[in-house]
Image (cartoon, rainbow, N blue to C red; front, side, top):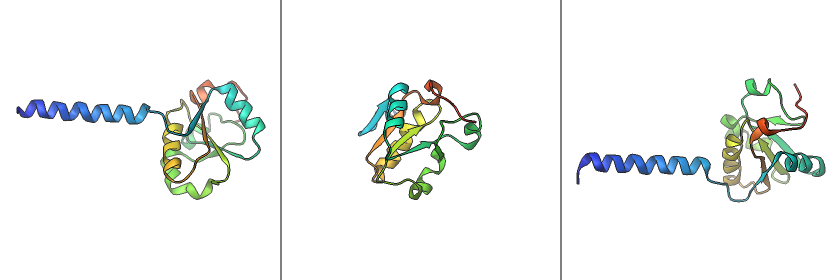
Length: 128
């Protein structure tokens, strides 16, 4: 077999896996539209709201009551997230919150929801 062809096939396979792993849904993660997210935050008393953006992004505005645990630090800060509460996650666009949910799920968290479209889609108040 031609080495160039083999190399190209490996590259295509890797890129396909990478795209799939970034955009595939997270089993058990509840994807909430902004109105649903807002309503569930108001009605669910047993919750924690986590903003997984970096601190510099949070300075631009955040959803009131959110705890900032950046995606880059989440593995080292799992102890700050109670497993007995519903975990609401959000980021800027919804991509990092899905990645955070994947990490949390692998570490025994089961009651997970995220804001589809991220804070960019949020229609509620933004604290500064």
